[in-house]
Length: 120
Image 1 (spheres, rainbow, N blue to C red):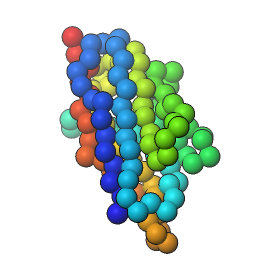
Image 2 (image 1 turned 120 degrees about the horizontal axis):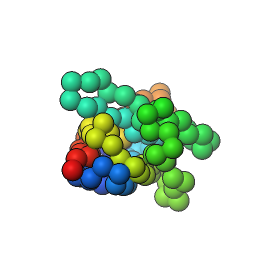
Image 3 (image 1 turned 90 degrees about the vertical axis):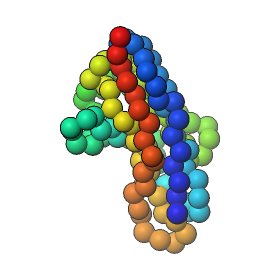
Image 4 (image 1 turned 60 degrees about the vertical axis):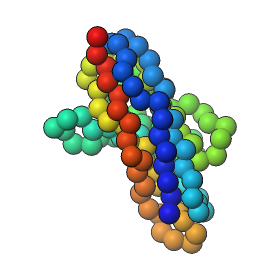
């Protein structure tokens, strides 16, 4: 099994910044991708940003230019640097990882979620 532990959510004013972090642990053989999704009340979960093992990143149009997945030195970790936050960024943010455990198949894993609230 793979465990994803997130940190860094909270309350921030519009225009402010936050950094989310996620660390994967467990009997990990390999990680294919890691990233962040979010779910606002009454809405479906949506992709925010993802980084594939080769270092390729992809961002939702709504966050391009404001959110960044920085290069990490620690293995099996992913962060999300969020700037110029808007009220519409308010959501529960979930860390996601596609990983193989032992010799098993590629499986999607989820963190428990961390609340980000953008409000004055």
